Amino acid sequence: MIINIATGPWLPVPAVQGGAIPRLWQGLAEEFAARGHKVRILCRSYPGQPQTEVINGVEYIRRGGLPQSTNIILDLLKDFFYGLLTFPTLPPADILVINDFWLPVFAALRPQVGHIVVNAARFPKGQYRLYTGVARFAAVSTAVQEAIVQEYPSAIRKTKVIPNPIDTSIFSPATQPKLEKKEKVILYVGRIHPEKGVHLLLNAFSILSQQINTVKLRIIGPVKENQGGGGETYLRNLHFIAEGLNVEFLEPIFDVHKLAEAYREADIFCYPSLAEKGESFGVAPLEAMASGLVPVVSSLNCFNDFIEEGRTGCFFEHSSPEATKKLATALKLAICNPDKIEKMSFQARHKASDFSYEKIASLYISAFEELLNNKS
Image 1 (tube, rainbow, N blue to C red):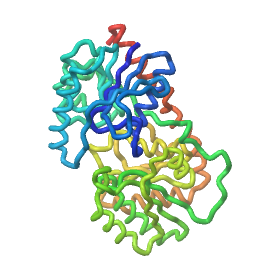
Image 2 (image 1 turned 90 degrees about the horizontal axis):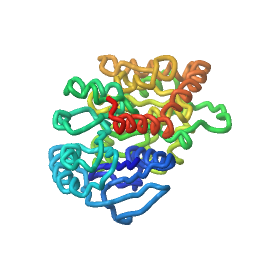
Image 3 (image 1 turned 180 degrees about the horizontal axis):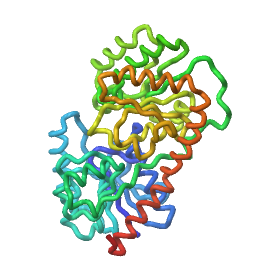
Image 4 (image 1 turned 60 degrees about the horizontal axis):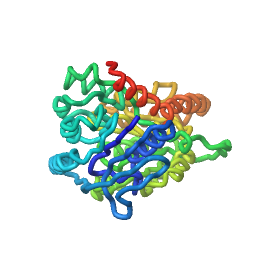
């Protein structure tokens, strides 16, 4: 089978500065290639990366590319012209996987690209009615699948849930038992942005610190707006809230091995996202689970695919007027119930193993074979 993967105008692959999406497609592509398929990744050109190269059996073809901004209208316009210029150059294949807004529309005009599969990694914004030439929508979560079908009911037969994978060979528990330490570390990894609820976490930690004085909050992630952060003004507000508290702000970690070590050094993971229509899956909580941490997360539907209350993680009602107190309570229960958390950690690790590159690649290959065999 010939599989082409088009990642759009923004992403250098392999990743230049971290990023779950480039890692995701590189890992899946290498898994496809290891199974004997011919795989190409069609991605943006980037200084220092050759126009073409082969890595671990995967051919990389790099053309064009644009810097992403914080203006969604401008980015959609950029992406429109990128898709218009790119689709005539798409090489023949059996399957074309696309992670882009406009390219599925134009690619359908070129039949030799093969069956088009859209990786639906974000909530729809009205575009799915334009994707009449797409053969399959691979929604990364049940929440995204339901949103696509609600927006475009005709997509129901074309849509399947195929989650994002994680590298379970890297994100794994410590090989040695953790040394018992007095201070318990609560970890957040993600963009430092208001929609991620970092301010809510700090306010909850302020309450928790009055009840338990042996806790520490470690926040790791990008602040810069061009990296998806909320900017320096938001960071100053966070530092104001954190004044006098045992809080540590760290730069984003782009080395996945060092990131996995950061997970292993913590005791509890918290991901208090408030992005009702922005949080489509949640890679960070899943990486934390694979590393042995129990996640405390907001009650967004996208987390329901891999977090079960009291078994593999804990939820708090982020939309409640009492959200700060509810989060503080959830964190306190996790800190004060080590025996239960140890059992949940085992169950969380077991659940995360379902999202390995090998297992998710098998789901994709099965979907591709169905299309090639003309099955619905």
